[in-house]
Image (spheres, helix red, strand yellow):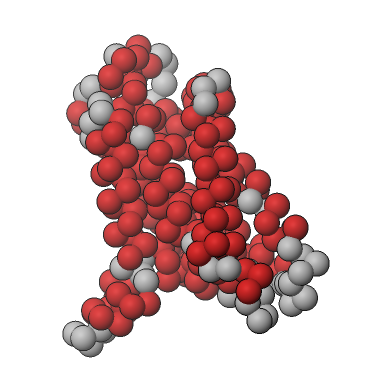
Amino acid sequence: MRNILTIYRREVAAYFNSPIAYIFMILFIFILSFLFFVFFPFFSQTNPDLRNFFFWFPWVLSIFIPAVTMRLWSEERRSGTIELLLTWPLQAWEVVVGKYLAGLFVIAISLILTLVVPMSLSSSVSSLDWGVVFTSYLGALLISSVYIALGSWASTLTNNQIVSLLIAIAFSLVMVGIGYPPVVKFLNALPGLGNFIGWFGTDSHFREFSKGLINPVGLIYGFSLTVFFLVLNNLFVEGRKF
């Protein structure tokens, strides 16, 4: 645990000692607010609610999280510090978990900052259910965990951060898209195919949480995929012998 915390503190410092974390947080809040207030005009709705605000979470996170994770391993490979890092008395999996937790911390802070939107609108939305707000943020954190683990793995594939970014965005968007209702409906042209593939999509599980439901299956889904990509990350770190 001490080694994981050492890596975690190192990575968090790297984020906040540079503009990366601050730029991400500002853009993340701005884009979500823009989509909510402008794309689907909140104040022009007859019965305004926060459904359209939470609707965008899986999509925006699938694009923004790769921007946070793209440097986790790519930068280490490009600068050559990976060789020094792996000569420390550390297990590869400890480095993997430490980097993952640092990325999760940045995203968690970003999500917390977006609470300013529902808090500022609490007086305008008479039917605001804080229980639904809580489960929606829990669902957002859950799918963020999957995207972070996926993005960290994508970062092991190349020493080019932009390539890492594009790979992670592509995979993340596919994961959102396959659970999106119109896509599921289209794939159900072959009976059951859409429902089966859609189960692996982050959007379908997030929508359960955004309705105020804490589905154990959704929790298992998020945990399982996170572990899967972290294991894959560890295998690539050990197998490629940077």
